[in-house]
Image (cartoon, rainbow, N blue to C red; front, side, top):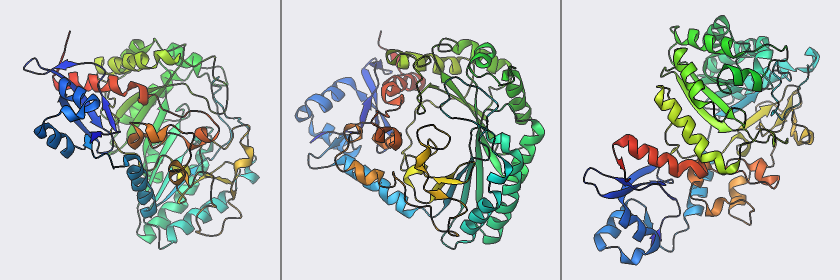
Length: 444
């Protein structure tokens, strides 16, 4: 027997109440966190034959010690394939506009104003209504995406007004969320999106405190947006809108990586230390473009993430400590029951394709030619899980976090680049923080 492939340990030895050296370990396939005596962990990883019978039994029951004959990676991949095969809902990522009112230097999309005649709104309505009326559909979920989706606010209202009643008539649930820069939101628009469009979740980007956000994410008009965005979120949290949630994302670059304390303090002062608002920071990444002028050094990723997590905690801001949830579906690109409809009506399987120069030829078809409720045409990444079991250039088969990552981004792997997420490197640090949160103490 040997230690499970899916074991991640805290990067520091901690002390329990009795002063005994321990480490936190995460079994990523079972989503379980354990506190192990450090000497037991050392034997589990390096000398499993030296474990006592009782230790072996306990570790095996926790799936931390597994039989030599087990192929754990294949087991997880097959579970993911089975999960996808059982899905009966339909997922639509809708991009109602090809233009964005911001001019972020690290953005990889090409933005332009699309004539109304090319928006194909009626064809999109027909497709979503047909999906809702299909007896095999158990639910409809819509993600409004961009460029900037609020540039197509009228379309959002119109499409929602057509699709939501169709779901009601079919007796199936409908849900919606939005990824937006937030600059075009107002309290009145949030109210309408909530009540008329069933929007319950907004992901909004704030790239640090007011000064750094307005510099890194300038409006094309030249004005700043930080104050407006923060005020609108606060106003919405003061409304009686049950279930409404906001996620605040910060793209960390060289310019703002040290602004964690200022940002967290401004969020606290603005009243956003609220359970309806969560926060996370992630390094600026390529989107088919060169971000070398923005990207933080790889060696700094863990320290930067620690700084931001500590700043959130110090100021009472909600932020996930451990990403332990299994990721059975890595993204919409691997699911035939999910599709992306670009601003001009092209059908894609992947959100990273529309509007990105160099990926113009990746469309699978057009919404005006799609046949009724049929699933989208086959895409390049539909066999992602099957391909992982073959000869692959991805690091996934040997990776300890695969169950909670799923491979991160099939497109990036397909383009010949590692797609490993920051959490692959920061998870041991996160486990140490979680241990301290549980009441364990530093060893030094």
